[in-house]
Amino acid sequence: MNKVTGFALLAVAAALGAAGWVALRPDPRPASPPSAAGGAMVAVTLPASLSAEAETGARIFGQVCAACHGQNAAGVERSGPPLVHRIYEPSHHGDEAFQLAVARGVSAHHWRFGTMPPVAGLTRGEVAMVVAYVRALQEANGIR
Image (cartoon, rainbow, N blue to C red):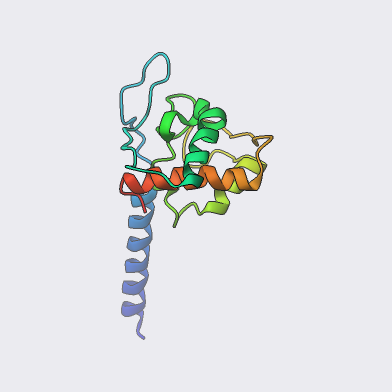
């Protein structure tokens, strides 16, 4: 391979990497105008039905997660990001990422909400049910 071909391949690889980064970064603009109370960040279409596991996950989510991540995981302005967002699609944040976030907390890296603290009192099984609910919401909104 000559130098010109090598540089061309390097340029193509850099362009593909930059395009991937741009495609996955969150939109810095809110999906809806901020409200004083901290409104939902995205509109969420609900699935026609949920599995029994996802139903239980919806109840747990409402009790434990919705205060920060909003009703139906739509996010809350100035509180927590929407989980119905391409950033959290399974290929970028697998199910184990949710388990680790609950168990260990998460340093802010995609959004400017600050660090998420660990969530006490949830078992791995309960988190798996919450993940089933979030994945059902994502799928109903075209995130796979």
